[in-house]
Length: 484
Figure 1: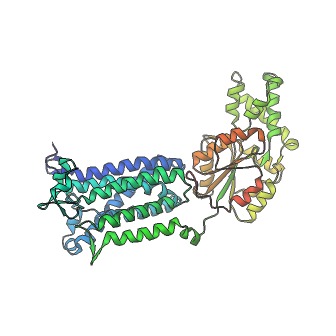
Figure 2: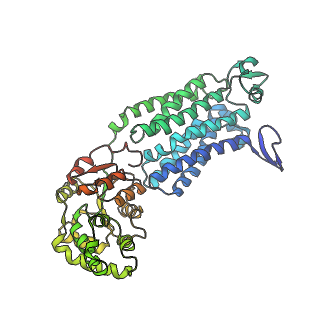
Figure 3: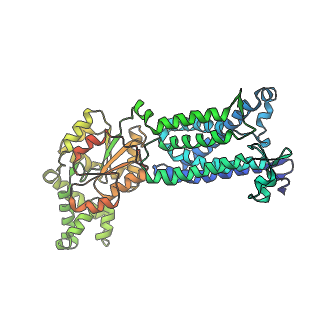
């Protein structure tokens, strides 16, 4: 085993070798992947999804990059010597072909797993600029992607090692690879850390920004190169770059959004304090426990506000740590069931809102911290059970809110992805669950005393009338970076 046996080889083991070209490309891909993972997790997907996409896009991208290069470099030669198509160690990968290969895999994967392709692409594609910028240094090692002949004085401000490597075919060459590398990395910074952070891009805008930026950079740099892949008398990379610029510009202007119809969102609701005014029954049930195990006076208004939303388990641990949780749960539910008929009523505007959504064909569901039996009891008493395609109770999930399991389970049972889901709830825990699931969060504020709690969680929208949802579902909600 020998490290660095020649300038282009990283390690040689007998007759086998790993080239710097491959190492640099892989390093760029892995670094870009680390940024993608963070974005994909924000969207409510597990790290395994990012891993699957990374490996699939990398493999298909390499295949696409190699086939593109062979097609436009010397198709006749590679058809006559097909085994040489596999000789990637000799160099010869075309970035644009790699993009098409990765996109094809992404389209297939998104369709198979019910993922919105453009939402996922927004999380991935801008980071590709970082991979491309780093990967261009593989061209430096292989003495590729260079420009015109220049004098030695051209490199007077460059390091000696850089100048020496740019002495190619008997002359110093312009470092066009370097221009593109700098342009790609600058574009990555501007799109990911400026544009996406300080504006409200709509779904797809990250992809369109990439196409505009990369197309503009590549069309200029390609004009300076002397080793371009050609299509007749045209530089193939410039042809594709023009297409990228046109598509990117039309996309940023919203042309494609006007031509396509967004699917109707799925609307999921919390129950307590959202669809049903269960607050009187909840407080009455807790008051009975305080009477028995503490004192009624200790059940202050602060504690009353605190118990609205969190699970029984969490509240019992907080206020009755020395009591048997199972016994407390049993007693609480007995009290709550007894109070339901007299104290649990629909929230103002809930029935009208549900009637409208049902008539318009929206899929709806409930994800609650109550057990399903109690959810159904409240709905049945108020004749509201017929509106919902799915109902998820606390007893049907392993992890309650703020874990996203309930929301994601509801989506799965409805055979829907979660990229176009709206979750409506009244508590901080509801907003946290929506954020963890990567869906659009709506905070319903019916009790002004809870405004600060709700605002601190920064839901995507706060409403004070459920009928506002009728207009909300018609909006283009895809500007929000962590959802839809």
